[in-house]
Image (tube, rainbow, N blue to C red; front, side, top):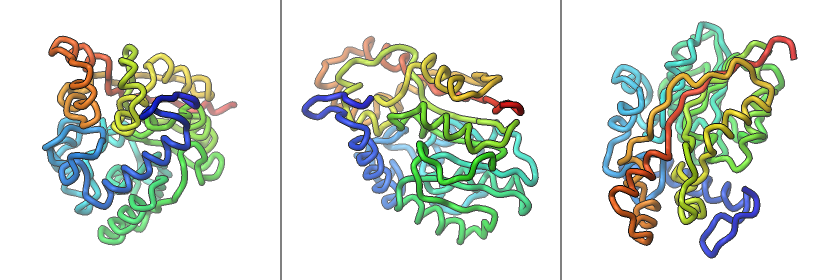
Length: 289
C-alpha cells in the first residue's frame, strides 16, 4: 500500500506510520478508548478496557494481575493464552503498547525467562516501562523500534506474540520476515489479529482514520496467511476465527462518519461487519532452514 492517494486518503507508508504513532501516542497519554472516544482504535466507544478485554478472551484474574494502566483495551484477542509459555522462555511482543501482554507473559516465563516488548511509540514505551517499575517486572524490557525492523538479534526468541498490531503495518511481509529472523529454530509465532474475509468499500480503504482503527489496513485472510508462509514459516494454523463484533466496527468514529456519508442501510452495515474477522494464528520456524 505504497501509493494509495486521495484528498484525505492513505498516500504513503510514512504517512501511515506517522499517523499511527501520533494516534497511539495520544491513547497512551489519555488511557485508551474510554477516556478518548474520539480517537480511532480497535475497540468500540463507551466500553472500559476491562469490558473490551473480556469480550476478546481475557479473564478477570489476568486483568487484575497486571499494573494499573497496562491494559488499554486495544487488542482483538488473547495471544498469551495460546502460547503455552513455560519457565525460561524468551518472549517477544510485537507492538507491545503499555505492556499488558508482556506482563502476563512475564508471569509465565518466571525469573529465568525474558520478555521483550517492541513498540514504535515513545509514549507507549514510557508508559510500559513505568508499569514495569510499578509492578516489579525485572524480567521485562521495552525497546523502541518498528516491527518491520526489529531491534532484536537473530535466532534469539522462543516465542513471538502480537495482538492486533500487524494489521497496522503497510509492510506485513517485512514483519513476518523479521519475525522469522529473530525466532530460534523451532520457535513459535502466536498472533491475534484482524483480517478481511472480503474487500471493504473503497471509501473505508482510503481512510487513514479507519486504517489506524484496525479496519482499512487489514489484509484479506488468504493474503495474510500467504505472507506468513512466504516468510518461511511452517505448520501454519488458524486456531480461531470469529467475525469482529459488529459494534466494534460500527462504533469506530471514522467508520461512523463513512457510514453517514455513504448512507449505508442496516443490511449493508451488517454485511460490512461480516467482512472483518478476528483470528488467532500459530506457526513454527522449522528447525532446519
